[in-house]
Length: 436
Figure 1: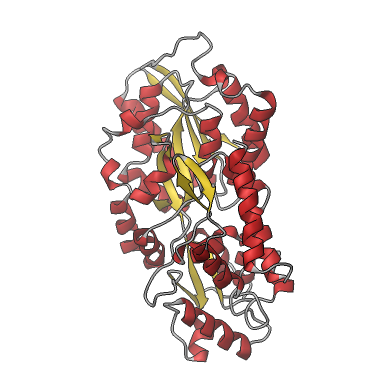
Figure 2 (figure 1 turned 30 degrees about the vertical axis):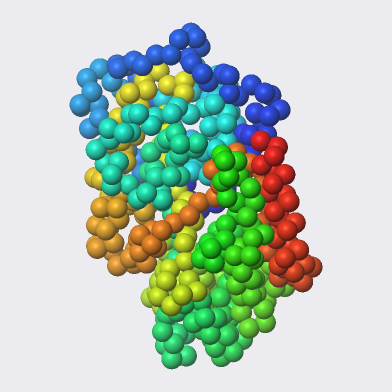
């Protein structure tokens, strides 16, 4: 699924489960009351219906043909489901409550994982994946995005990370090279904005959580840390506060004025860069198509988002989609095997060619970067180490309540300093953890 709205589905699902108190028990086994693992018949698979889905369908059709040829008596039925958050959440909730309506294999956003596990909808496939021949090729940090409490509930299929897009024409005019440190980033922001007052030095947003987190992580901070199996807020730690300050310092008259940027989201920032309204922006590789459709086509480059230390890369959020086996699956083994085929090197490469999906396998990342230089900043970012949100169902509540965006907005609008805003956010985060 492209870019935004993943966690909203988990919020709706989690809320529905809490209200009905029936999501988890309904998925322990098929309706007969006895788990099955059929090796023939029709296997049901739900994948996301995305923009440009025809290209995705072409790759999936090849995989289905290959799988059916090597599994006699098996038919793979693919259904492409709506990616709208509320529609998707309703469909998943229905599958969790009614095993007879559940697929065997499902594609899901990796931030939805804790809520789905808490609802009892996904199967623990740790043992099966231990024998997957490509397991050792998975990037370790990305592999963790499918793990809850030491158990693996999915195969990471593709990943999305962010890097720094910059206007090559404006940098050349200013005599600047792409920034390799936070200090150089600030200098470039100020110099270009001074020369072009109608252009933001860098587009940042008060509602752009995943654009801010790299600075918090680079400073050694985090949203929360695990302590004895329980999460505790860390957003108010000295390190986190240092990162928050670095991010919010980018809002201002010589960068991205708060009155114009406090409400910016990641999507709006892509629009600004594509329209030539900013000299820099932190964006996903998938933003490329929109940028190339605008006036700055051919006048931009991409580098890893720099950290404070010269030459370092700030950790990026490892968003993306996983393939999970439903706990109610009637064809569990076949579902695992089909997931492994879709996540294999050959099909990860084909999915990149079709959809621009960044591979989760290190060998394939290197291969696609070698044939498309544009990708190198993104694969370098993955190689430098990615981070993730707390793998706890409380994250859905934290995200839905806009705890982090509210914190950033409080600071950039002058309603609170970093210490007060982060302390308030920490209290809300801990409250969410305590409620689950």
